[in-house]
Length: 183
Image (cartoon, rainbow, N blue to C red; front, side, top):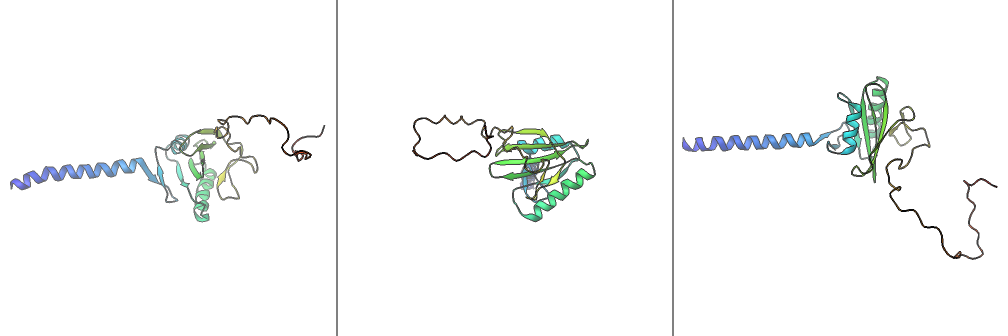
């Protein structure tokens, strides 16, 4: 009987600790429809959820380029836009994360950051949501994605110093600049 009295409180403490561990793990991350685990403390994830608001469809946070996953996430986002339902979807790529979120008013935003949340930027979408040839959804017209816009990816790098000294290749002319207008 005394063993039972001592074992019961210990058993209750162990059960509370196990339940507490499971609860904190589930609040720290969740699973998206694509099956990938998403860290709720991630700045991009927080910004997407903030923009979309409560009740938004989580269309996924993809790390792979598998066409089935891309297709499912794109369908989720496009259906949400068509139904004017809030949503968010993110794509983790080498060195950066790009995401799109839509709120209950139908306004679309793009969220971009370097890996780890550095240089987080949010801008209103300049165009309607579409599926790019990559399979990802985007709200930029073809050929207009602002690589590194607002992210500071290269803006924080020092400028290249001007060329100094003589041309190391005497007698050769540099190739013409196709973007420079003739005089």
